Length: 453
Ligand code: SF4
Ligand code: SF4
Image 1 (cartoon, protein in one colour):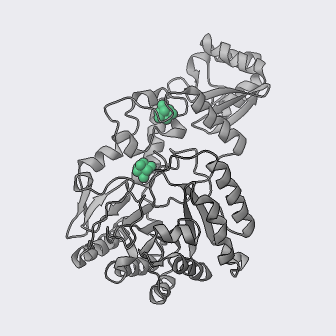
Image 2 (spheres, helix red, strand yellow):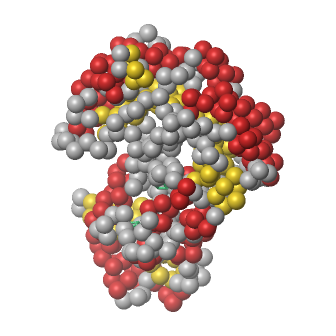
């Protein structure tokens, strides 16, 4: 390829970014994700070749640099449609048929009434038996018709999903487990729960069906937690939750222990450590500490530093910390961006993004009696919303950013937007972060209020 390209055939990629770093330049291509660290004189050569539209000049002056630029995707064929390449990449990821993710909301009711919860609770709501049957049919259809299916992710969210364990959760878990085993497809089952309703019968059932993970929340030490998360004010939930977390990890289930912290409760978080001292190091390593600032909290000064110190302490104690979320949000797009994902509400309405209200008006489909989803226009708009925002088409980090998640883009479809405020220095900061830290791996997506948007 190198020998064949003449000046008129080549151009510098639109996805290159250059930024100064110490006495050099970091040169990055966001499509290939490659970096070069260049002396200023070489950067000058590239800039002047670009200005004079004479990229081959680089080859004449510095063949090694030229070859390196070509091999790493900084130089591309002139007729290459780089936006089309990004579109193909988005389609490959967001329309992959190797994974199906299904989120079920058995109820919108909850046995707790936390002040900061953004969900609209619907007392007494539960998935009807007929809807459970349709969900099971949908799961069976999915396994039977998706020929390339390799992974199935089943997750439960709410409300508190365990309020409807026997009637809703158990039959769906059992059905999915059996069919995944029969077909030899990997299954990951996850619960976002307050953890208080796990009893010995449920626990043995979860173990039998190889449930992989839970996300359970604490609001600080016993004193703070019991003031916020309780069934009755006289009897808090802290002791029960701690005991259940321990039972889960002893039985090989991973737990993300989420701490919702505020300036009032952050200092008490370390008090929970002694409660886990009787666990082995291996058992402790099944707990991931996920500290999240309560998003309505205004007093934030110094909180981040405190949170980091606490994380270090728990890491030394044997807990895990979540992987940082990938900076490459195109290749690690949100599950709601993906075609093969559905969120089924207790009433049979189908949604995608679980960071927005599950109002009827927001539904993107309905579950039919034959166990198929009848998607509406909103779903198809979502699948096609990426690359519709004009500023993204001229952005050097588009193949990394992807131009925001589908929900963010849908909510701004009539206006130009940039999740980095059209600020080139913020875009360069992302490139620098990636250069300094290496690319991050994606944390397992947890079904909580989305912190991306
Ligand atoms: S708002 Fe959050 S959950 Fe919803 S689509 Fe965007 S990233 Fe995904
Ligand atoms: S949202 Fe902003 S940073 Fe992201 S691709 Fe679009 S213009 Fe670039």
